[in-house]
Amino acid sequence: QVQLVESGGGLVQPGGSLRLSCAASGSLFSINAMGWYRQAPGRQRELVAIIITDDTTHYADSVKGRFTISRGNDKNTVYLQMNRLKPEDTAVYYCNWKEPGGPNYWGQGTQVTVSS
Image 1 (cartoon, helix red, strand yellow):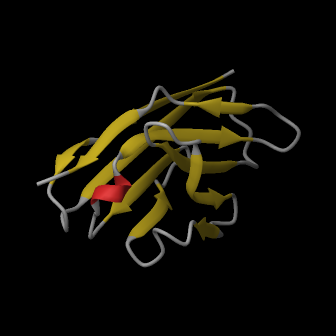
Image 2 (cartoon, helix red, strand yellow):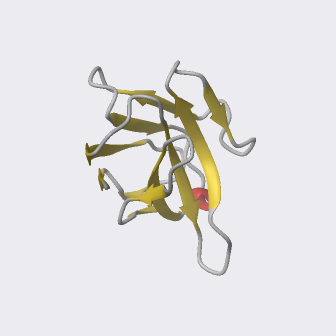
């Protein structure tokens, strides 16, 4: 089992910044992918960014150049630095942990609201 605890959401004005954090604990396998997904009301959950064991990253086109995903030195914490936020970034953001051949683990979600 893997537990994920997120923090860092909140209310921010358009053009502002937020940093999300997610700490993983439990039975962690060294080869894994950590990522951030988001779900806005009435919409499906979508990938925002992922980072895999060798620190390769992938971003949704809608956030490229504005968001940056990174890992902590312990490799079990993942961050999402979100800059130049837009109202359309408003959603619940979920942390994800995935190991090869294993299930997806999800955090409880953290609300990000971009509004003036």
